Image 1 (cartoon, helix red, strand yellow):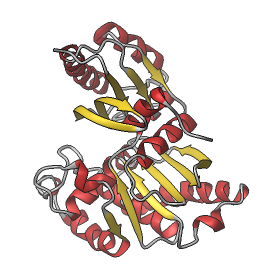
Image 2: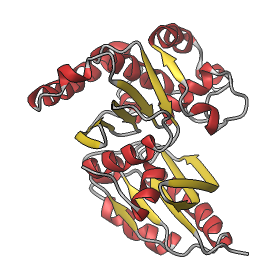
Image 3: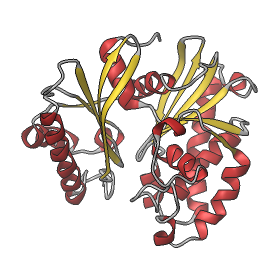
Length: 312
């Protein structure tokens, strides 16, 4: 029998499609069903032609699975959002219409600042104890969001075209990937300097918090998980030294061997190395020797936003 208190959020990301069905009240989330599938919507994305047909087909297939899950739970109006791949694609609006025809629900393409705000709301729901100040980063397939949160308010939020699918498709040359990272992170630093927060973020008491697939997979590898457990991922601490040791080990493994590592998410083998380089570069930029992991993020933020919201 369907429950009338359930709501659903769908995140159609540049790399992964995710669904969360939950009961939400008074700032808390009681998960009922969680679904995720790597479809790599941004794979093959081109400026002149937009989303690749194969990527569209993979994603629509996953959304048909989600439609069946929603039907079983009696949910007719999920809130579905699309992020960087759809913001960038010249045929993004066509994809939105196709989702409506195929899956039967409305898809909203949200801008970068909205994605950052919702991610912050979700991330903080899983961090205990809640810090006075933290810098949250959300590494996606096509973009990375940064949120500086201080004493209950978002002080800075921005999205940058830095994603693991983009890095991976730029080639596996470490120097080329590092050049891209250096260029974009220089912009991040300058933007934070311009608003007067960069020096404050470098202070030791400002917590660095990471979310999304790259960071949670690194946590799962660190914990040598055979079966993913969200509860153990939340608030797990990753040290710079451990991650720095992990990089050459992962980089030298053939793709097939990487996929067999305990904790590695299937389909992420070619993305984990550029993702790890990104995490290490961020930790270096902000002078942090550790970060706290949150499995919660955009999905949870969507659900909480439907019920409440966060101060800005």
